[in-house]
Length: 71
Figure (cartoon, rainbow, N blue to C red):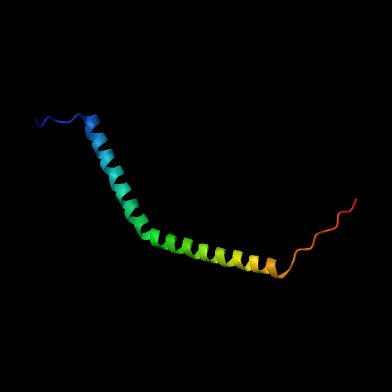
């Protein structure tokens, strides 16, 4: 049942093994980066919400003036 592999099959297996190793390496690196990215996204969302709230409060406090239409 153990038949020898052809040269092209051996090259394909070696290439697949290399690709799989690179993929697993990237997956491990991305798992280290994900918490940093998540924290940054959460902070950005909080700051955006605070800015929008501040803009809304400012809009309520200062009524907008309608600009006169010049014909």
